[in-house]
Image 1 (cartoon, rainbow, N blue to C red):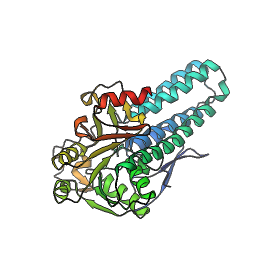
Image 2: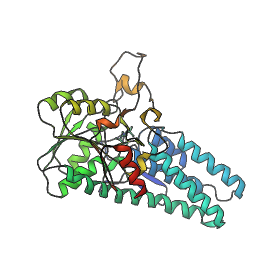
Image 3: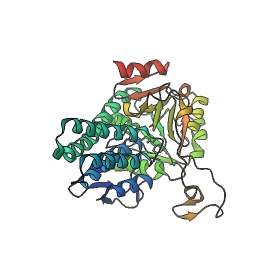
Length: 346
Ligand code: MRU
């Protein structure tokens, strides 16, 4: 299985997703600042993967603070957490993972076993990684019932092993269906501006021999009209309490197109992607990224230098365009707000 993040003796080892599909290479972050840079520049990306990398980065930071007295240790720990929280604003898994590390730190403070802090945080970060893989497999098992044999599935961006601890959410559902013997065909949207669909989803599917066809984002409507798509399945960066879902820019357009062609539109995500503190999609912060991502393609200019650009990295799909949200605890359909509430209370 593709594992994009690993804890090693030297630090946090990441598959460099910027180098894919050309080169499969790993980099090792020996200082937490390198993990922060890797999150910002998309070396590691995808909501769950960002959370896991941040948790490991926080553990790595504490490893570098061996002799701090308790008061300054708390200040330094909080500062590191704030630095990670400032990396990318949309994926709530980042804040979920930081909170979990903060809880671990608080517990350690109460227990007053000073020497155990680094061990505790390291173990917790590694547990988040392993739990994520297990959760993705459960999402896969839940979601595969929605996919029939011979289905053609359109996906957007990369919600696969690379975007998680391993296995994936949307691609995890596709993997699980294939493991059950279903014969699927995957259509991968290219996903401008940085091509996670063409570079990463297509690569992942080809690694496993799952048939995949790349289309440019603007082809999706016509391909649906031609009857080539049976369902759409995407991941999520943050799901509001009413089911409104933030995901990679272009997801909303796909959902509207799916509705226009009466094609089911599914979101697959772990509970850690659901933000009950956010009532609806209007409250989800949307990251705006460097205009150069739009003015260039693989470093080559595709627009006049200095041309004005708007580059929101995510959009929000209103819950009524979503046929179902697939989680590890079950599948939620309308009314989404009630279904989501039940997920957290059952
Ligand atoms: O900017 P990215 O590549 O981090 O965006 C990733 C996505 O939008 C994914 O679809 C989402 O995080 C789900 S990953 C399981």
